[in-house]
Image 1 (spheres, helix red, strand yellow):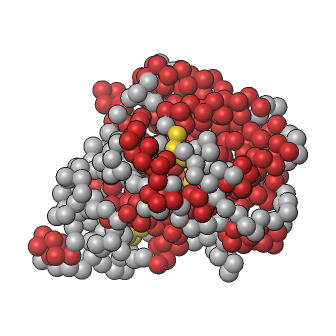
Image 2 (tube, one colour; image 1 turned 60 degrees about the vertical axis):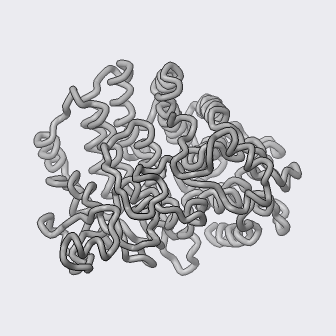
Length: 495
């Protein structure tokens, strides 16, 4: 099975393209026909991503804008709100050529072969996972015509409005979860490296994604947000850490199934834990699991110092009298930075925090805001054992934390979403999206010399340069509709 998958991935990588959507969607070496299960495996790994886009879009930009990480390295543009166009477009450059294109091929094959409804449903849920990251990061993007150059000859896809993309994604989720009833195992079997074909887990995942996307609408369509949240909760969302959607990567010699974040940490030793995040983790049992001192690997909380964002070495020296960053904490290389680390897409902790918010806003989920909040904190701490056994946090430790930092009903939305921010550490796409949705945690922007945002935290990343020549008409239409192709332009749901 693994050998087939590696061959498939090699073929798909060779057939994937480089930059523009026109080139990205051409597939001159397409194999005759590969089993849907193996295609799904490849698509999931493509979605998890390579070092290229994880380094640039997830870590260099999103993680430092969200102040999980900080660094003095100049090329970490997100830490200083500078613009590196190639880094900013890295996600859009890579995902269309592999995950999107091959997902359209899979859906076409499932239709031609009249595959069981649950296989189509699972593919559509994963299609939403792919596209909601893209549209959340960039706004209006190619959607309805994307990935169809080989299938339909569309080499210059239009950019769809994010409002229309969200409507379609939510509709797909609604249809998909309706088809995932009765339990059992789908035809993907072990080719499904998220849930091994478990239909009930996919149903809960689909509803939890519906809850996430529904809550994204809170600024632009509060009634719609409530309606979708109600539908998702009634359908049944994740119920425990056993329902988490993640890929367990491996660090084998083939290099195909490595964690893209882990590959980045192998190559780049510059990121440090942000002072913002370190301060939040004070007296938190997660701190020695997530962080270690760079100089000697100590995880003693007294040794773990956070680095302020928005500094270069000269500025650091002016502030502290030295340029050495080894005294600051970095991500714990013993536990969380491995190339075999899990990559999380949706966690039960996030589900509980969203239930807490829905209970606070609308009285949903039994109206038990505190109960869901505390369940979210507990789940966020207990899930870390998925990284390594030594990352286990006991119930007693969680109880102590909750007693010391109890739920504050008068500050519910901020407290819930600040914990959500902590729980999405390393899934920086989601941390960035949720921060834009609610404005929490209350991050203090930096104002690094030469920044392009006038000292404000960016609101999106920017399109690929190649689109301006290869798909110019559609690119210009998107910019005219959405606003300037700049870091400060807000996407539709962030108005």
